[in-house]
Image (tube, rainbow, N blue to C red; front, side, top):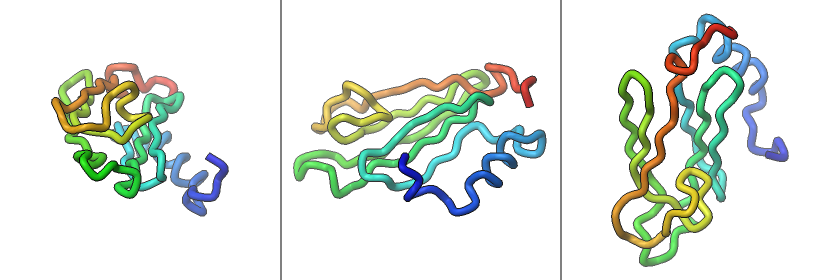
Length: 113
């Protein structure tokens, strides 16, 4: 990011999320940035930025997902726009939803907090 779409006090928010107080945080979902985004930081927290609905083709389902968590993974099932960073390689046309599995922080180990 060029920083234009970041929260004005993002450094304080990151500090809190990555601190022992924020240990329970597994994923942060926000939106939207036109192309979307997905990043996992050094603590194992996943940051997902939803894709803009303005980039969805008229015959597309739109960009959305349902998240389900178990003890080890967060599974995202849904649709992304063409070139989606959340569902790379997935078609933007309606069909079976794409899936992406992200390892949860507790499974990675949060000992570096």
